[in-house]
Amino acid sequence: MQNAIEEAGIATVSLSLAPYITLATGVPRALYVRFPFGDPFGEPGSVETQRTILVSALQWLYDAPEPNQLYKLIVSWRRSRRRQQE
Image (tube, rainbow, N blue to C red; front, side, top):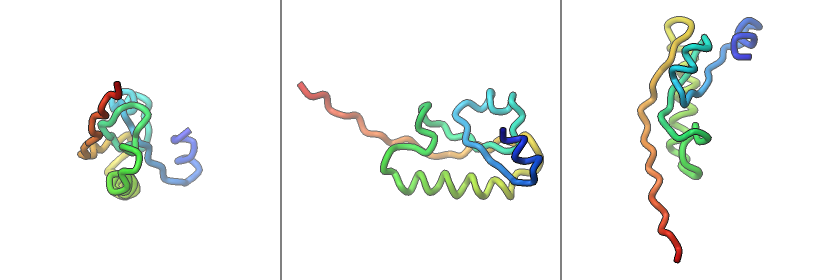
């Protein structure tokens, strides 16, 4: 899908939680975020982290030097452990 959109002249970038799979598919640009599956933008309510990821993805549209490029974004997952209720 991403390659078809690119062929139509629209630049794309995807978020990846599995970099080896992403590179194998040959996407034009991807931003790798080391977060749990299902949470590519981080913890719910973590506005600053989510903004960082979004801005970084948009910047990667311009900074990727060639096709099939993956950029590893260093962001932290800081979810605190919930106390188990007895």
